[in-house]
Amino acid sequence: EDGDSRILEISAATGRVVFVEEEE
Image (cartoon, rainbow, N blue to C red; front, side, top):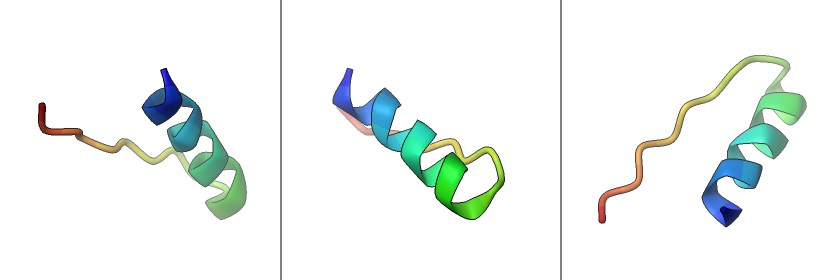
């Protein structure tokens, strides 16, 4: 969903893979 696409954007911006844990 949106959260997943956000991770991809951050990864591209920082040049590294970023994992974001979302609490439900």
